[in-house]
Length: 200
Length: 318
Image (cartoon, rainbow over all chains, first blue to last red; front, side, top):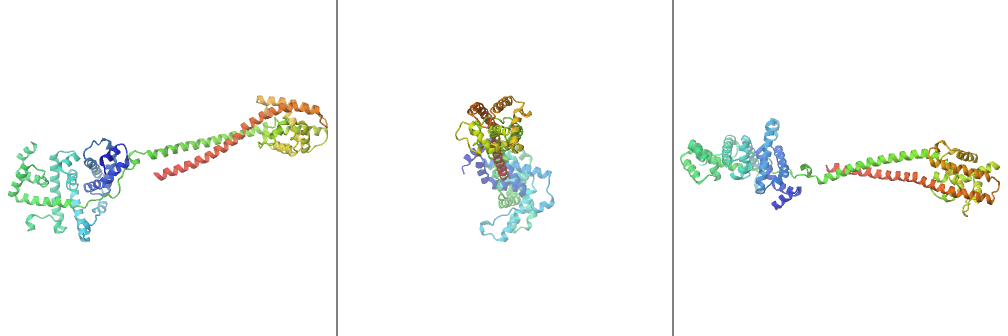
């Protein structure tokens, strides 16, 4: 995929060229939105908004990392969805139905159904822990630990300083750790958070 | 500088605890990393926190990626880029306009045709008595009433003479009367005058009744019909019509002589010119009108079909 050529064509209004970029990045954008929002429908809305906004703004893309530029738009779309969610909170019944981690495939084909179920449960527990964080902490933690961005890239995407990124990530991780220490007791021992003394 | 000030103010344990996350990611300066490591050797709590924090980061990293549940490709219509939809919609608007225009045109044409037929039907009785020469020329033509009516005048005039002379004569005898009056050798076709008379009589059925009615018709032609009065041309025709029967009555005799033929020929040429003029005006006013109606009707049908098809296509696309 010649990303530069596709971007150049997209700048001319070529939707088919832009859609090649969409197909390449849509899993990344959706995964980011899902982990930040914790809701499949809201994540789909945010993803759609992201690509629509990106197409409308692609002529203002001045080069650099297209991925970081797209993630910035996606992050803003997630903030919009979070604000929308605050104004119109979901009912507890809706929360019950959306209280599942997205279906995943068996890892390497060697994963047993039991292991797969445990991993699904782990995913739900972690997602619930992420949902307890503030919006800024969530965004920073997902960009760092799910998307694997560096502090500098996170600072570019979120438009804050490196110090703010460090602070938000530290507090976010600490809060999630505390959540998992309390709620992760039902998980298998290898997924439980343990102090070094317990390993011995 | 700000970090330095914060470090001074914050207790060492708190600062290390907040820096553990960056320490895991290797985002601390070597100086700060050394400071953290020194504290970790002295503080058990911070050491334990480092372990659990590392495990937390590892667990988050193990999360299954959530794949996009559907495609998020951008549709041109959704982003305002609609080169394809615009064309059919604009074409659809044009088609609708054209269909409406064609329907209006058809209504106007039919209305005009009906009006002309109504006016022309009574007016056609007026130029009835033209010359017989036109009869030969126009008889084979498929053009209806207007043309056919004119040739029938002379036989009618002849018939009128015959009625005056003797008894009611049948139509074929009118054809025989015609023969000497016309110069063309092929004129004496017995059947033609009958057809022509029928054609002439078609608009007003009461004229078909008998030769007497034909004479009445001729008489009526002498006195202009109220409908024929408004225009100048009818007046001219009336003059010709008035002149012609006078000459015809002058030649009233059982057997037409060569003088009669000669006298009859002169007005017949003038009448032929008049007939041709009337013929041309008739063709120009009525037949093209009918033709135009048919053409517009066909176009209207095509436009309706195209409009419906385009509408269906647009609905299907959207």
